[in-house]
Length: 375
Length: 93
Image (tube, rainbow over all chains, first blue to last red; front, side, top):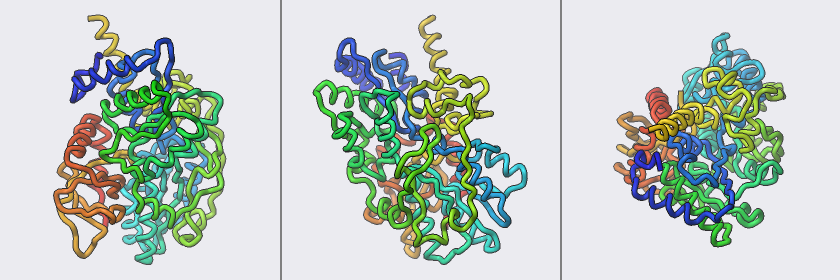
C-alpha cells in the first residue's frame, strides 16, 4: 500500500489491490512475465512489486530491443560505419551498446561518422543532403519500429534515393515469447502483454499462448494502474480456470492491430530463417530482413558484412535476466562492474532494460521501503 | 539521446495538403512534422491526438489517453526530456 498515494487514482488502486489479494488462491505462488521493457520501467519506478502480495512475482521478459541485440551485430554495424564514405545513423539508445570491440560511441570517438537520429526519416534526409556519401540506418526494434524502417525504404524508393540503406536488425516478439515458453528454466502462470508492439500486431498473434500453452495473456498499458489491472485480469482468468488473450489497453490497442503497418512490413521485409538473440541464442523465424525487391536499400547486400559472432562476456548474465530466470540484482556484476555508466551487458544500457530500470529506480524504492518501515 | 520504445502523444495542428503523408504535430510544445502514412485508414483532423514512435504516428488516441500518457511521460523525467530533445533536432520531410 505504500506507494498508492503516488498514483493518480489512489482509490481505484486500493480497490484493485484488495481484489488482487481476494483472487489469490491461498498458498499458491504466481509468476507473471511482463514482456515489454516499458512495463519493467513502470514496475520499478513505482515499486509495484513491493506493493503486490508476496506470492505474486513479476519477472521481466525479453521486450527491450536494445537488450536483445547480439554483440556480433554491433561489431558488424561498426564495421559498416568504418567503411569509406559511410555515414552510420542510429537511434540514441543504440549508441552505448557494447559489441565485442566497443560501442558506436567508441567508434565515433575513433573517427567514424556516426550520427544520432530521432527517426529513420531523418537518416533519409541526411542521405538526400549528402549524395556523395553512403548513409546507413541501424534499424533495430520490434514491430513498433519495423513499420517506420519499411516506410522509410518505400519513401527512398519512391524518391529514387540510391545512397540510403538500412542495416536490418528488426526482431519479432512472438518467437521470443515462444522460446521462453519452451524453455525448461521457467514456469510462468501468465503474461502481461506488450502495449505498443500490440498497436501494430494486435492481440490475435498471442492466441497460441492461451490455446496451446494454457497461459493467459493481457495486453497492458504503461501506467501503474494499467499494470495492476492487468495482474487482476490475469488472476481472474486463473481463478475461473480460463486462459485467454484479453486487452486491458483498449484505449490504444486495436484487436486487429494496425493493418497498414503490417502491410508495409510485409511489403519491404521478410522473415529470416533464424537470428541470434542476446542471451536467448538462435531463434527460428524471429527477425526480419529486407526483401530482394528492395535489395538496393539493404546494407547487408550492398556491403560485405563480416557476420561476426561474439560470445557474451562470461561475467554477464543478461541472458538469464532477459529470460526472467534472474532478477537484475542477482547478476554477479550488477551495480559493481556493470553500471549504466560502464555497462557490460545490454540490460544495463537502455532505460527500458531491466537492470538499468532497477538500478535507476528500484534501489530507491527499496530504500524508501526501509525508511517507511523505520518510521 | 532518444528511446525508440517510448510512444509519445502529440496533437495534430495542421495537415499539409501537398504532403498527405505528413502532419504538423505539437508534442509538449515542440512542433515538428510527423509521418502519418501508417494511419491512412483513419481520418485525421487538427485537434486529433496521435501516438508517435520515431517520427511515425502508430495510432490515433483520444484526448484523455493523451493527457494520461503525457502525465506518465512527464513523470519518467529524463527519458522523456531526452526524447523531446531528439524530436527537437528532427527535420522530417
